[in-house]
Image (tube, rainbow, N blue to C red; front, side, top):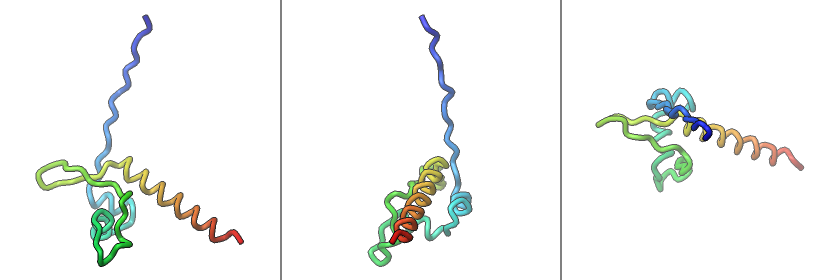
Length: 88
């Protein structure tokens, strides 16, 4: 019999709103605008933006890895668009 390998449980890091603001460079209003569709400002809504999780009765946080993945996707999308603009 081979010994079973146990992976250490992954403990996600939770970011609070001010940490998310600092990490992505957006204001509180912009963050919440990304999460809720407003017909008056449809371009603000981003269905790919990570949703917060409840961490208490009146507290929410975002999973750091989801914020990082969203940022990476935004960077990739921007770089791709820039390359397409530069091509004749």
